[in-house]
Length: 135
Image 1 (cartoon, rainbow, N blue to C red):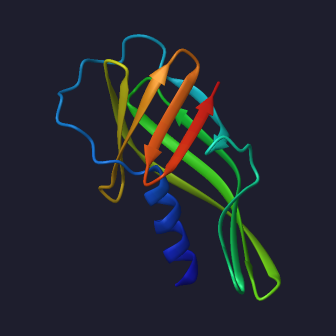
Image 2: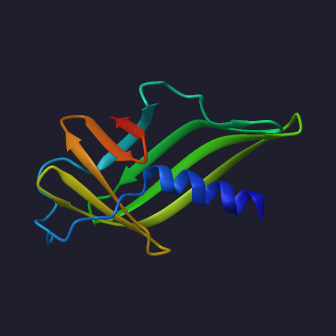
């Protein structure tokens, strides 16, 4: 149960309500492997939550955008509860499309996220978090 709540929390860091533009195709070079570079300017590991007996740290992330419009997002985080660490790797799947400089993604649970692409940088912004990926 705790892990599900943590997954939802981390997903909310990346989640943004997508705007309603239609797909413009996958022109350009959005597809490829993107690596988590920073959260709020700090490279991994990044502490997201640090309260009395609980800490959540994001250790790494890899986002694969495929040419067929699907994606795989794999991230590793460490939860430390009452001094006992547990490292977890999770993978999310979904579809995406590119609309201008935006990448709009929808995971297999129906959650949408939007990123801005600029050259070899992919950036998510939500709830005070700026999450950057690079190739």
